[in-house]
Length: 545
Image 1 (tube, one colour):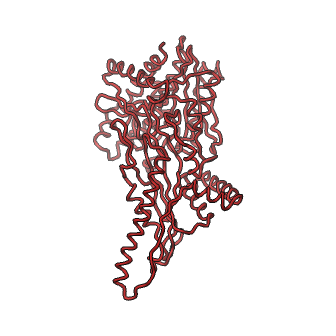
Image 2 (cartoon, rainbow, N blue to C red):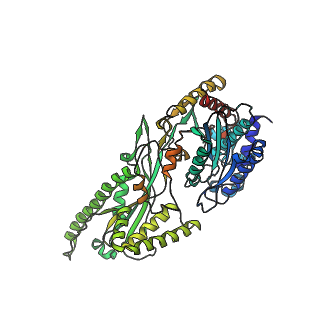
Image 3 (cartoon, rainbow, N blue to C red):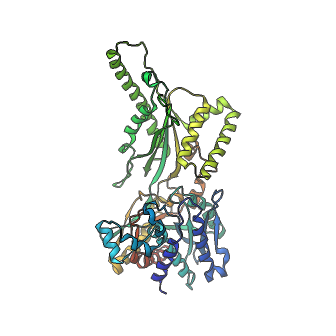
């Protein structure tokens, strides 16, 4: 069996495992990958070089299968990818077909498809199925690369492969794998020179676009407390949804939050959740409303974003109160029975860090006891699947505000996981040129052999686990942790480990289309011939003296 056929068969075997993100099914994939390496002669002879690393404190008990091949040089090529996939609700009643590439193609022929997808389906040049593109195809190619390298008599450099879970959710796999990377680095005195994350790439004409970095992401949470009143006395209350509406208008799709890097720009923020917090129906103005925003960045840190949000929230508070005042003045003039009530609300914006500081001072030991009990309750709800991380964040902020006894209207700001630091491989000190140099060598060969080249972009906007492989800038991550109520056993990032392993990464894999959709597909030639050839060139270039 040739290399191309091996890669295709292994991809199908991996796709057949329904390893949906943040589920117990991910364990099936990690066990399969660990077993696959364990059956190779090289690792049977050298069992200490492979394993199935347990992610510390992971409530699902998920693991990171890894395989290490030492070479003459300590310069190490790291191959890292995720084995989880998004859910298959888009397949409807045909969800059982999603994990079978051959059967899903027959199913898609019965569906209404756009012209491009229909053409690809009929061509026979593409493999369809959940995860074949994102990213089990790239994983399979990397696994075969390692297997072939174990069989070489000359090993000029070292190779480390690892596969992680949960990339599509909270990246628990890669956040936890940092300790594994550091321990192997110290044990074998390795120098991590380049990491390849074989996520699918896009193609524009005769160029494959390869990101040399990954955009960052954080999710600010906004909770607004107003003042309740009967709706017949609405001017005597303060509707938090009105303030939130003003905040929404000033932030949704606001280019003020977009970062620009050499002509690349982050998409502006968008709200993923926004609603009042009333649990019952009555004719009162709601007391609180909440929501969270997805913000993508290149250079902006969470603290930068917070510093922009605080004045916006204050201005929004003021704007809504002024709007109420103007309408109330007109209302009074139109009323037969005007009242002497005056609308007076002082705008206030508070961060979670400031609220916690207040509680420590005012409530002392009672606060710590309350917080620990609340954290335990939230942990159980998350583990039972009753809350996701952003919902749990809102729940905690709501509970802490209630515990504080603060009743005046205010805006409370915090952060919900996940957080992805933005990184660029050409900003890693001492390793700035590793990614581009190797990619340029591969590009020349691809143009000669296959008629296409590689072009680079600074960041993948789609995010990736390369965010947890290095740090290309200093920032106050303590500020982030103090404004993230889930920080601790439920969610954390060891920034010290990221700084110490500090490996530049390329988001570089086979050509694919329609990620996270039922028409997801990977180009067979790119997967089984072109990408493997590029991996060989990149490794040789990395290890050359």
